[in-house]
Amino acid sequence: DPFSQRLRDLLITVEIDLKQTFQQQAIEAVYRQVFISFLGVLAGGTAMIALLFVQL
Figure 1: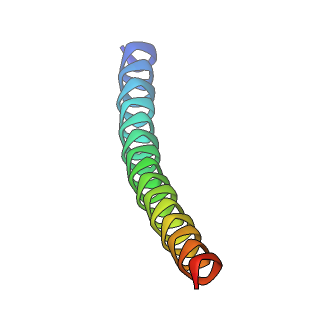
Figure 2: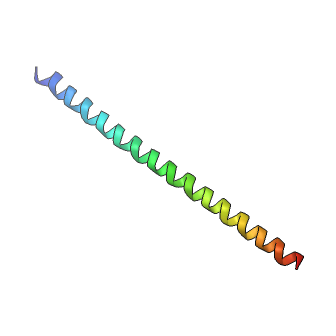
Figure 3: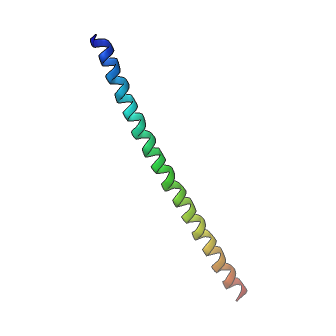
C-alpha cells in the first residue's frame, strides 16, 4: 500500500542522510586530529627554539 511504500522511502532517505553525516563527522574528526598534532609539533618546536635561545 502507498503508506508503507512512503515509509520505506523515508527510512532509506534517513539512512542515506545518516551515512553522509557520519562520513562528514569522521572526516572532520581526522582533520581535527591532524590540526591538533600540527599545533603540538609547532608548540614543541617553538619551545625547543626558545630553550636554545635561553641557553645561548
